[in-house]
Figure 1: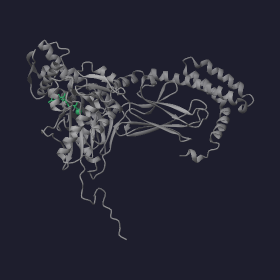
Figure 2: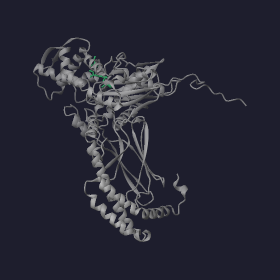
Figure 3: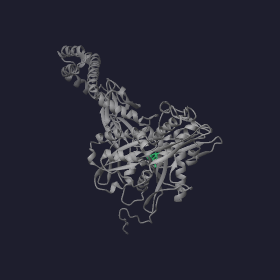
Figure 4: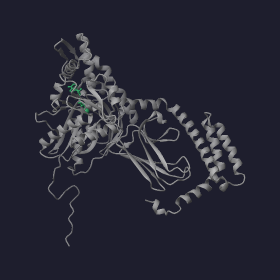
Length: 624
Ligand code: ADP
Ligand code: MG
């Protein structure tokens, strides 16, 4: 018999088939697609030879649409129908969008669920649909350049994107007929682009200031593996804000007061952006406003510009400090600082970041392209084109995830900054005798009370056998996948009854909210702890009394022995006497006494109950 032939790992016997995969940087301002060709990652040009696609989609009255530069150039003339920075709306509710976009030219209308729609000349479109237009064009552009169908794409998202925003990005990809190999955090992609995974061990910082978002991430390299130690940032800080600041300055200088002339505002913003970008290279620029009504010209020096934007640039430093603190590393431990995003071309930004980290920052890979290039490298690996196996990437969970327990308290199951993917489980039990269902409430946040955290999802576990309170064992497992999406499973362990839910919140969490939640958890830490202890003990007191009363009423006569009842009654009265006061230690000790006196009785009835629940069933039935 012939022996089966086995090739060496990584060496296939068939001629090597290159599978076409791309990396996409789906940016707030600009989007790019890149791919590995002949071993080199490069950004793929459009048919017009452009590498950067402005993330703007214009909907025309005849139902056609423009995507990219054409849309951006027409935006000033047609502001209502030219949608830019749509990434800011991804995964957000209408209410959230309206709260932050009061100056927006777009006509937001209510859509299905709480998803906002934008009324354009031809259709009411969702942010997911607008993003899909951009992704679809990039896909076509890549397929034309690469000459074939794509097996998939790695799409990058800001490290701070929450579940809803990641899910919305995946939905947009599906609409654009793109298979998502993986959502990848932008800073991690930048680290890959710089080949930092091949370097020795060390800690690096990725500073990403784009058009609309700011992210700082601290990564640790460990034998070629990235671990994101911490992330921080501000989803409402970027080059757009510099443009707005400069536009305001221009209007002030020109003595123009425009409020609702969106066309003129857009024109001034375009001029501001152009001037800002020039100032990264020149010491002085000429700025102009030219409109049917207004005409103005002025000179702007880099010095004056720097003075204007300095407070804005400084705003990036406190997230840097926080990220370092969360990662528990000092500035001297940072081995490299990578600059990402078009706004890091501004010399003042580079200077401030260099000063802060006390070192030269890395800028030699084009900061506009670095994320797309890293994504392309990762896509190449995930598509199976590399012999040396899969690159392992670890990201972190930005806020703690937990479950509501009695008394409106949060039991944290996955801590903030835990590396993902991860799965953690914890056992819970029932509160009342005979309980056959349990309501589960999944929350996100750092505080002790549910009311101070964010509600993510509610679901129920039903149909487990009735038992006395405390006898059922419900294991709740929280699993966060590599894309940062959460799945929750609850299983009653004696019966195997199970329920699960995939958490796709219909609205997202604002970055400011995340920051606020983190700040609050620090400010209130002690007060929270006291409140928690008291609430815990009060709930416990109530539970113990209710359980005891119910038990005594149902089977006290059967299971109680001679003088047990009077001892129990005395201890019960003692618990009631302290339950409403605010001394949690007194409640705790009274409960303890009550539990000690009733221990023997409880054990007798627990045994009887389990025997009864299992009667008529065999063990195998429960051991699924
Ligand atoms: P995003 O990731 O948000 O899509 P990018 O990384 O493409 O953003 O950065 C876009 C921002 O970079 C814009 O605000 C743009 O004006 C700014 N930018 C691009 N080139 C320069 C430059 N030479 N000087 C200053 N800012 C620049
Ligand atoms: Mg970017």
